[in-house]
Length: 139
Image 1: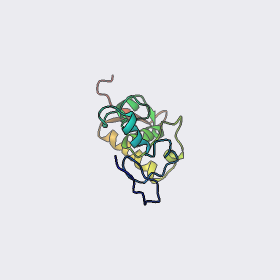
Image 2: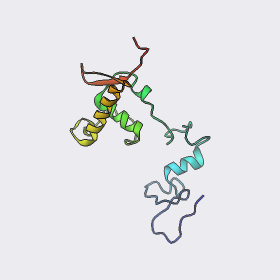
Image 3: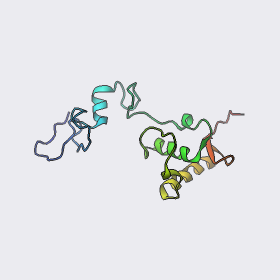
Image 4: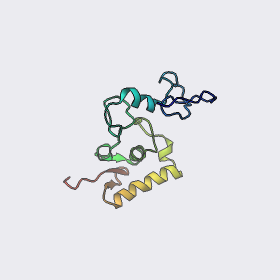
């Protein structure tokens, strides 16, 4: 365990020694949440999800999250989360970040279309643009 530099004006994580600018610094024993989780809650391989809720090792699997037809905006959110560029839990509906014309949503939408071209996703345009994981065994 790293000990923070006593001369540092910024709070430092007790586990990794990096700056810890979190409002929950004291709650998590003067650590980042991730450091706290791996220090006290996680059991086993840190590359595998544990049973603790909110485990940072949780992997978002597109094969299950896009198993059913999913509208373009939610599919973009799920792809972004799987890539690690979007955090948090799944919203009931997605916000303007995904449906507005901007480089962020455009890139995720293009990536979905690229996955269709690669044969990994299926796309339908009616009743709305939607995607699902391609399953070659599906009738």
